[in-house]
Image 1: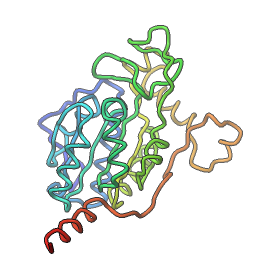
Image 2: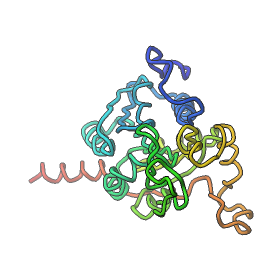
Image 3: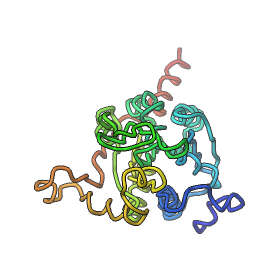
Image 4: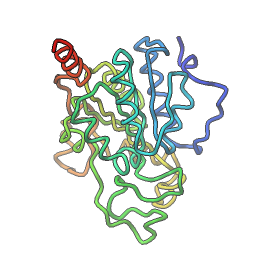
Length: 266
C-alpha cells in the first residue's frame, strides 16, 4: 500500500492553514504506517478537539473524533476491549496537557499500549491563538497581549516522570526522524509519547514575529540538537531530540487479563 491508500481523499483539501506543521506530522505518521506494512483494519485513531485532532478525519483507519482533552480516555476503552488493535492518539499541546493533562498522566502511569503523538505548536490554533501550557514565559498570544507569565510544561519530562515507557521528541523540520520515532513508538509495547514541535505561522508565528512557516522550521533546526550533543554543554537552552526513554514494563491490558483469569478461577 502507498501512503495515499491510508487517506480519505474525499475530505481533501484539508482545513489547516498554509504552512501549518500538522500536515508534515500527518506525512510522517503515514510513512511510518506504510513502512511497517500495517493494515488499515488493525489501526484505531482517537482524537479530541483542535487543529491536530482533525487528523482523524483524514486517515482511512477506524477513527473516533471525541471530546476536548478526552481522547486518551476513549482510546483506553478501545484498547481494553480490543487489545489486538494498534491505537494511536494525535493531540495538540492544550488537548494533551491542559484539559487533557490528568488523562495524560494516568495513561503514562498505567503503561497501556497506546501511541500518543503530541503536536506542540505552543498555541491554541483553532480557537484564535490563546496561550497554552507549552507557550512559555514572554510569549505573546491573543490572551496574553502584554506577554505570558506562565512557565511551560516540558512534555518529555512530564511523560517520563509519569511513567511512560517510551518517550521521544522531534520536529517538523526533522520529518524523517519523526517517521522513525513514530515507527518505534507504535512497535513499543507500552505507553509511548512522541512530541513533535510543529509550527503555527498563523497565530504563534505572527504574534511573536517569527516569520513564515519556513522560517519557523529553520528555527527548529537551529534550536534543537540530538541527545548527547556537545553543543548542549555550551548552550543549555538548546532542545534535545531523539529517544529519552525506552524500557520494558508490564503492559496494562496484559496485566488486566491476568486479573480476569484469576477471577474466573474463583
